[in-house]
Length: 490
Image (cartoon, rainbow, N blue to C red; front, side, top):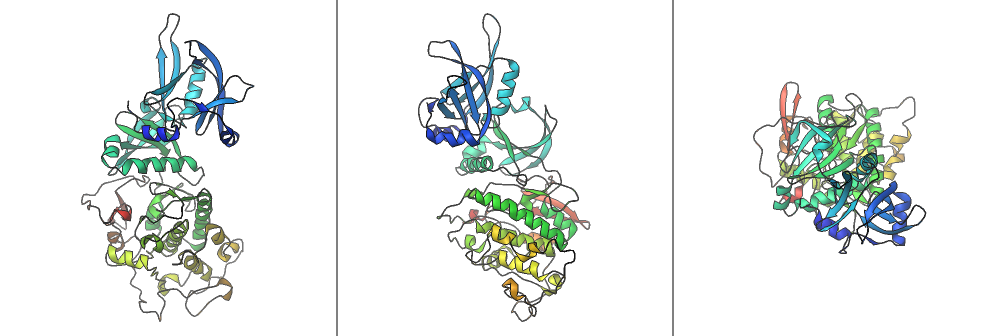
């Protein structure tokens, strides 16, 4: 099998040999990322098997002469193919595994078959494994997108459910952006580890597809939850946003930007609990840098500086959280227009409407939080840490909350409050904003530069790679296309 990740492995291991010399730069990896250590037999230059000690971290394999000696050499195995084999010899079959990339490979022989299974279990979380069907039973197709198909699968050993995202290698090779995007998504997800993030457990590759083993979320996404609920009580919204800011604070601490936070990418962990979730879909995530200007995201959730193609940073995610807070508090979209262009223009200019009808029973602290999270100027916008220190959260433990009428006539001087756009006495005040889950709103949420999908497709709401989702709300069938990156617009 020709691995599609060969070029990635060459960047990680630029030499022409399997091993590279160990040096001081590898010490932090050994100290912080140790996974497993044990003895294996390897073939020496004279063709004899010698017992050596190996240390596995979350990116590399280290070679030691014995248990007491420090590592002599190492290899980054993140993009190498893991294959199990059986060799026939005169006495008895010999079990082993190989790590390879192109013509460069190395064979290893565990002492027993039990040791082999243990090494393979740990190595498959780091390298690119093969023979998916030996370890997972495919139950059913959960959804299908333009580039990938998601299946519900069962781990043969633990009987645990997983989502298997299968990406065609033909599609990856046909689109020059597809493979780099997949590699970027894998690299980002390998770095992140948080209970509120969908986890990438393993990667498998065969002749036809690359398979990503992900958490299976069977309770739908935030969009479906808001569509059914209408909106969240303020106390529930407070806890939800607090959890969302905390996980985003962790993501940003890793210098990573999600760039596509929206209700469809927030998957619920429980059928009834509205505050437990996991963030999914890191296809647009990237490392933060000073020269980021790529126009991407989803209409109605993208930060203004991103839509203006200005340099941006981690605060584009904060803006998206502010829009999500608006949605779950009111059940309405923050940016409304008669078509996608109007939505994008209002989004770009940060024209957020605070209609009296929808905000009259919501506290001024919550309203001020929305204003602070959706500041048009990213220099004035909160960071995740600053948002978590907002008075709205500081009053969480109070037994009785005083809900104050949110109007332009009442301003709490302690909140550094700015009169919101859309109140009476502003040019565009009206009460015509449709519900967030209404057909009018959903019809606009299409991305530019994509062909319309006219035939409805029934897809599991837990699946994050769907081109369309189908929900029933008051006996009304609502079709919603998954929003693709706006950078596809010419």
